[in-house]
Length: 166
Ligand code: S3P
Image (cartoon, rainbow, N blue to C red; front, side, top):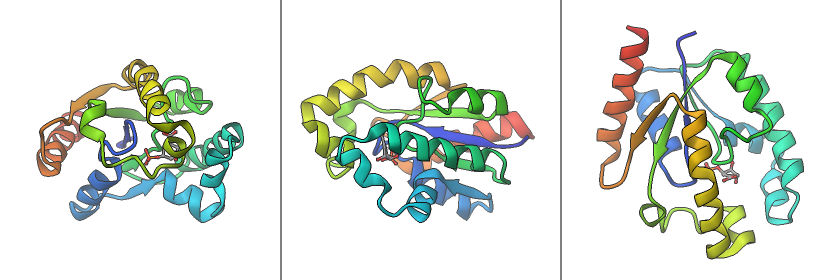
């Protein structure tokens, strides 16, 4: 199937790149938007320490998305090698592009995210560090984002698409 998933920490540009994909005529899907549509209170679960319940909801949305028709999917920041949906993602043969950023580069973009509010900045930084190798393990492609504008990053993602599907 001709489709790619975008993964990476909060603020790495997954949803913004999806807007580029949409403008270029691709079919796009954003798992966070679908979760919110299905359960408007879902993100509160994270703030309240009920992460397992959130991941269950997220897994069910990802499972539906994998059965749907799209070209580019933006996944929530929790999607990586250790996510409960990982086996299903792997089996679906969806290729993942990891938008790799330094923690410093993301500053200013994640502070309002529910997990950051719950864990505090130091805890969130630890989470970031623990996830970096898991994104790398899950991804087929890695695109570095530090010091680069969105259109440059989109060009690289688009090149990946072309190298795979054209
Ligand atoms: C999460 C990241 C968020 C969203 C949820 C959980 C995470 O997505 O899925 O708040 O576990 O890091 P973004 O990466 O779009 O912020």
